[in-house]
Amino acid sequence: MDIGYPFSLEVFLMRMKNMQTVELKVEMVGIHEKRLRKCLSKVKGIEKVEVDVSSQKVMVTGYTHRNKVLKALRRGGLKAEFWSAQNELLNAYASATYGSLRINNFNLF
Image 1 (cartoon, rainbow, N blue to C red):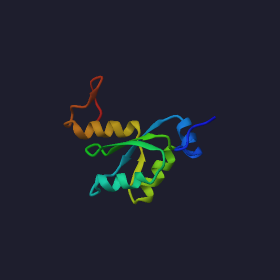
Image 2 (cartoon, rainbow, N blue to C red; image 1 turned 30 degrees about the vertical axis):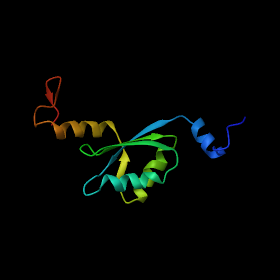
Image 3 (cartoon, helix red, strand yellow; image 1 turned 120 degrees about the vertical axis):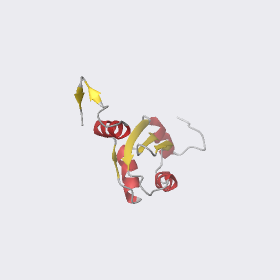
């Protein structure tokens, strides 16, 4: 199978994997977006990085494993964890006014 000169075997194998999107919660207090992107630039296989500073959410799309992305951020000194449904709820609560977050007429907080 000829894949052409500019591609190495490593690049070919990365592209054969499925592209995935990793959602992370990163504490962005006092941290510039440039520092975050520099940490992620060292990881091979990343195609796109989206940062939402207000909700502290980072979405990384690429051909790399999700644990490698998390490890790169932690090595750069950033506090990071995988995004969860609990983070969605806390983000909705923080942006809503007190008492307005209701599900089936029950106040959550």
